[in-house]
Image (tube, rainbow, N blue to C red; front, side, top):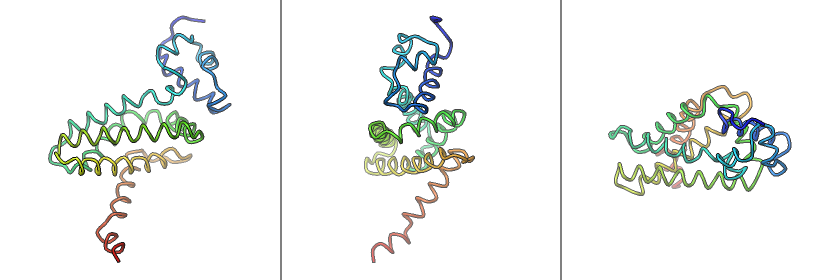
Length: 196
């Protein structure tokens, strides 16, 4: 087996997703992943702590990218708009070119309660990181937390649609649809109706 091959993390992720699809997450071993990727276990553990990290390894990088976009964003925009814009930019940059792999990852996570719980925890951590970055910009922690939570919720709704078979719109397009739906849901008219 060769000692070095280019793009080892991507090769390992591709092999893992194929195996997770074929035989399930629980029944797949690291040994099978490295055999499929034609790499060594040492190479695997140089990149990932365990097979779960194949699915979650990019979370920290995605969070850094989103927070960086928020910190670099327009100071005159409302906090919610700043977050939505950051989520769209990062989606275009990190997800669109990998749509099939991201959709497969999502399907594996959705089928496993333990992985789904971890994904929800990662989303909560992302919301907190976004709220912290917004708090620095706008000064009000409650506004920052609400804006972060609402934008991440809209992003999750868009993501669910984006990963469905046959969906062709970009994640950014679907994000705009989700934002419009969110605005409709919490419009003043909706609040007036709920007060009755």
